Image (cartoon, rainbow, N blue to C red; front, side, top):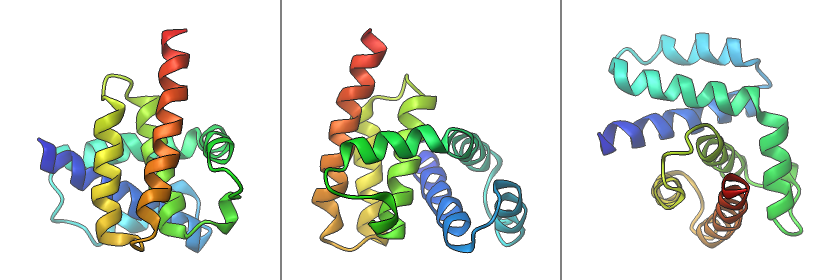
Length: 141
């Protein structure tokens, strides 16, 4: 299960990256992205599509949350991988409140180890940790 979820999160980051860099609509990304990935099982694809839907439909809210917690960093100045890893993680925190934030953060950092620059790790960890505390406070009311 953990491998399936991590693979889904990785695919979401790739889909967000593709849409961000290629200036494509979520519909265009979804159509093009899955054409070349017939090796992805149904469960992995299902979670990836759900998470991508949350990330794209709530993107303005997610971007505002990221910018509020990324001190002195505007989204457009962040590395594309970092920006989209953050978007996917925040989407999961918002859309899947039963998944503990610590798992979302750890999974994001594992994906970052593979795709992001080494110096991104402390930045991503700090921003996601701050966001998770805010999201948790909002849940507890």
